[in-house]
Every structure is written in C-alpha cells, then in structure tokens.
Figure 1: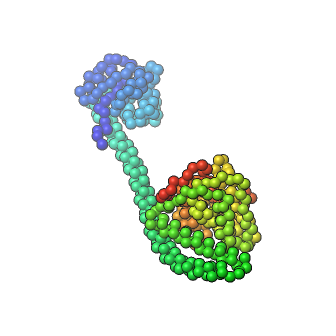
Figure 2: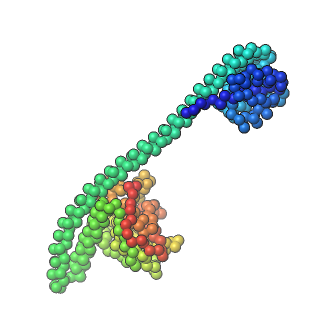
Figure 3: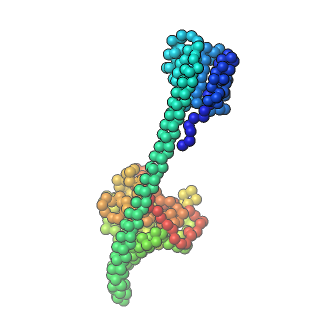
Length: 395
C-alpha cells in the first residue's frame, strides 16, 4: 500500500524567529514548511500535503485553535499541535473539543518534548491513513464481491433457464410428433367430408379445429427452435394488420370460454401494410386474446383494437377482469412467469415479447381505464424486419 506519511510538517507562527528555531530543530528529520498566519497556512495546505501542523495559539486574525479547527474540516487526516506561552485553560479546552488537537504544549518548550510530540503525531497519522485506506479498499472489494455474486446468480439463473428450455424442447418435440399423426388422420377426414354435403356450421368447426391444431404445431415448432438455438427465425412479408386481428379472433373461437364472452374487434380503416411475420404476429395476438378470455367473467367484454398511434401501429387487447398486479407486471414478460398461478408453463408472454422485439416493437401490460387489463403492442411502420435469428435473454 506504500508509506502513508509524507514526512512533511507545517510550522505556523506570526513570529519569524520562533519559526526559524523550530525549523533548525526539525529539518534533519522532516520536510519543514512555514507560514506566518492562519490564512496563509490554509492556502499552503491546498498546494502541499503534510502530516502535522504545529501552530502558535496567540496569532492575530486567527488563533492556533481556529486554524486547526479549519484544518480538521478540510484535511481530517492531518494532526495538529498547539503551542502557547500562556496557561490558558480555555484554549486547552478549545484545542481538545473544537480542533481535536493531538497535543497541547506550553512555551518555553523543550526540544525533546517537541520531537516526541511530532513522532507520536506522525505515528497517529500513519495509523489513521492506513486504516482509511484499508476501509476504502474493503469497501471497493465488497462492491466487487457483490457484483461478482450478482453475476454468479445471473449465470446460475441462465443455466437453469437453458436447462428448462431443453426440457421444454424435448417435450414439445414429442407432442408435435403425436399431433402430426393426428393431423394426418384429420386431413384425410377433411378430404372425405369435402366430397359430401355438410352443414356450413359443421364445416366451419372442422376448419377452425384444423387451423387451431396447425397453430399449435407452429407454436411447438417455435418452442423447439428456440430451445435448440436460443433464437427465433422471423420472416419479412407484406402483412395486413386487419388480417392479423381477424385471424387471431377467429382462432380464439376454439377457446372453451369464447362463447361465454363478448368479443369485438375495432380496426381503424386504411391501416398500412407491414413488413412482418404474419404467423408470429397472429400467435402473439391470439395469446393475448386467450389470456383476456380466461381473465374475464361470464358475459365479460374483450376488445381487440388496431390503430395508428404516434406513427406506429398499435395492437391492443383489453378486458374487464381483475387486472394485473404491480408485482406481476414487473416480471410478466420473463420466462416461466405465469399470471395463471400453477397453470401453464409461463412461456406465452415471454415468446410474445421475443416476437415483438424481433419486429423492432415493444409489448407492455397496463391498466384499462375503468378496470381490467390492457396489453399493448407497438410496431414501427415503414421498416423491414431483418429476416434471420433473433436472440432472447433470460430476463
């Protein structure tokens, strides 16, 4: 850590002869500086570093105690010694209480007393500065340790995140395989039924069901892709916002609660087309609509909106349910966080965030005026999505 002492002493006395005598005594052992008034000493201390200030008490303008009090405020690591030719108990009390002087010596002083006082004062200053350095070093190391601990915890969370993603990837791969087998049979049944006269409602139910399974397969494929690569592939095609809303509402009809809710769509006319991955945007909006359906009571209202807002496309889903707590809002778009308690994997909103991020937009959860939740997506207009991998973090 190096020597904390400078080896320098400042003598302050309005009598030059007193300064000369002390200088002759001390300069063999210390680097001696001199000032002839309190203000001059304070100015000198702004330019040089010393270990001890030796000040005469009876000086015009500023006494020795007043000087050492000012030194203590500006340079608390410097020790002070007061010299006086008077038996002044008030000055002694002030030196101790106000200036925290290290030593109080009376004139005429003995050389041995001065030398001993300076050596003890320097030893005191050295110990104090060493302790201050150690405290500063300890505080810095404590901050470094805290930062290292935070980094370690983040890495542990990332490893847990990857492990869980791997499990989900394996699970989604198996489920997708079984669903594809089911789809083969259903597509065959669809072809057979297409050769017969069926009620329009029955044909629509079959079509919606197949579309729902297709969408589920794409979601599973997206989970598997992300679990393997830690990234999503996004396409950049012409995309009609009204079609995204229509598809999401249509697919949400397969939710068991759809018929018990009042679902409406409000799409501003003349919205510009986007360069986006339509299927993935539909998946995001469908996820928000389903969450709103499940959060709503029977005959509850769910509204899907699409409009221009501040030069961006705004897609929003509103419900009149209980809303989202402030604690949950802060974590809602992180992986494995679900607003449904123990139900679900808690990946839906996280994947939605990754998709929206891939389109250069943002997604947020807020409060609906009058009660309920409002999920809002903002997408930039006039910029293409860069086709390729979009990576997502663990938080």
